[in-house]
Length: 329
Ligand SMILES: C[S@@+](CC[C@H](N)C(=O)[O-])C[C@H]1O[C@@H](n2cnc3c(N)ncnc32)[C@H](O)[C@@H]1O
Image 1 (cartoon, rainbow, N blue to C red):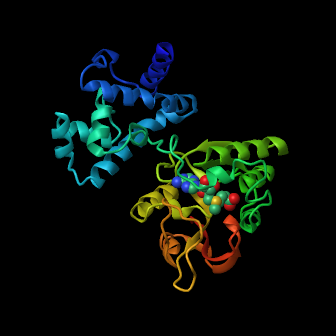
Image 2 (cartoon, rainbow, N blue to C red; image 1 turned 90 degrees about the vertical axis):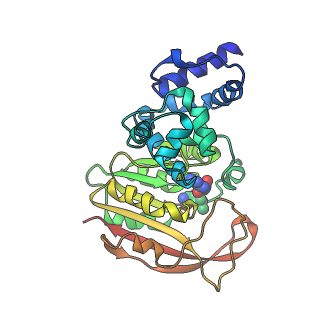
Image 3 (cartoon, rainbow, N blue to C red; image 1 turned 90 degrees about the horizontal axis):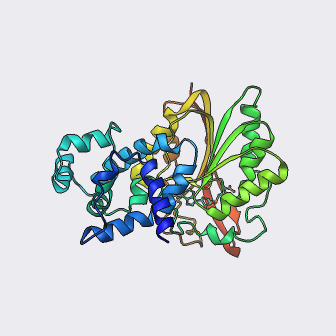
């Protein structure tokens, strides 16, 4: 048991490039609980360490998250620094990704900001079931089928992969669309918060014999730090809290190559359409036209709104959906 903990703990130290292991106090007295909590996240950190490219990204994620959760708590940098016994410059450096907090400060930081260390590090979703689809995806049948969404054919028409094109599928579910893109020659990365979903996406890619990079990530935590040509997402953007939409869409737009496209759809609220039967605590409604507003400075290829029947959860209901194809010119 001890060996396992040390192993994970060492990995955690490696991953966050702690400045000095010596500064860590032994798990005694009131630091004991904090240390235990820290060790509890170590399994998740191991996953981070093992995923390529994550280490470099960690500093940025931590920077964004410290700032985000500090602001959510209504704390200034000075106030946070004061509670930690540090200077405000130290906090400022973390938030600008110029430095990372010492590992021994993480439990205290997580307590003050009332957020888990996992979440601070940008991988909040590992332990909790944050999607109702986790269970639905655990059967061998494909809940959403294996046929691609019609929007995938629009991508193929508008931006065929006549040259290498990087495509990101945001909230790929069981991977039907991501696999379609990979099969048609795009260089595809896909993520979803559901373990079962990403496992099935990987299996589908293996079965078809195509390469697909699949990650587990929460859309609220995920930020791009490398460029893509196409961002694609179907039925997922309602998991972004309204107050984060500007920032997240700015990040998506910033890391899209010139000439690149975003092909998105999102459920929108209409007074004449009943709410969906699925009760999701992490879903937030969008208004008609709201998605389009994020793209006022891009070329809009199409932006229709459609109403369609749906039978998810086995209960017939209707959805209104905004669809958008926008290009960075
Ligand atoms: C309606 S399904 C759409 C799946 C896929 N895009 C498709 O069209 O087949 C919504 C997906 O969003 C995922 N999801 C839910 N909350 C999420 C979150 N916070 N971050 C990332 N994905 C999330 C679910 O696991 C699910 O796969």
